[in-house]
Length: 266
Image 1 (spheres, rainbow, N blue to C red):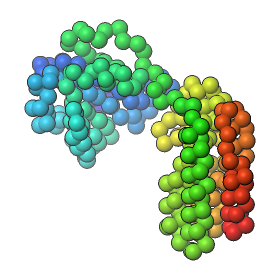
Image 2 (image 1 turned 90 degrees about the horizontal axis):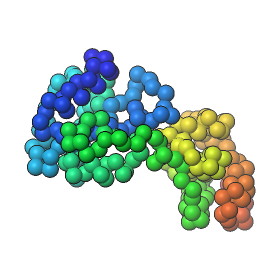
Image 3 (image 1 turned 120 degrees about the vertical axis):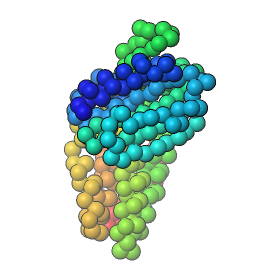
Image 4 (image 1 turned 120 degrees about the horizontal axis):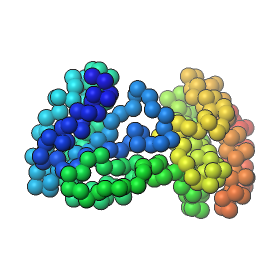
């Protein structure tokens, strides 16, 4: 079925099932900064009465499409099924008790109510990605990120020097590159007055910084060394102005000594 047909089916199911009191919608389809494309999920929550909630563990989902694969995530106060259908549609469907609606709306500015049989949530504000905007770091946040970046960079170096490609790449990918991206995200935050999101998995960072692709060729020790060198150079160039603009401090002596130590051995 088309995505439009699936959406209408989602609404019809909520309208005709008497136990479903509200339909919530969240995610990228509610984000005005996201350009729609065929790959967007439907993120839907059916809110049911607290009394009916326990019975929805066995909610029939088969009419939404031919399920190719699904992941079931039962958690406290909700049931959740992540479904990929053979027709390319994807539906992340959650069931929550209606008593959780206030917390649901307060949790994320992308969350909204599509259908409300109770009449309690009319004239809701327009959705926005404000909940996901870059947050200004504290001094502790800044210290921790810089320390983690340089501390774990020495692990990457150790893996390179030992000839242990998987060890070096693991720490580069999971920590060093992530801390670099945290610092770059704060740079974007400063430059935009902390009024936007860089997206899930930092996907919008290439709009603001060139050369990030050089951080992804880790196919041998030489290329991992080059990626580490690129990351160190980017942080070395970034920290003075970022520290100044955030009005936060960092241990420049430790940064310079660690950077020099690693470069001398690469």
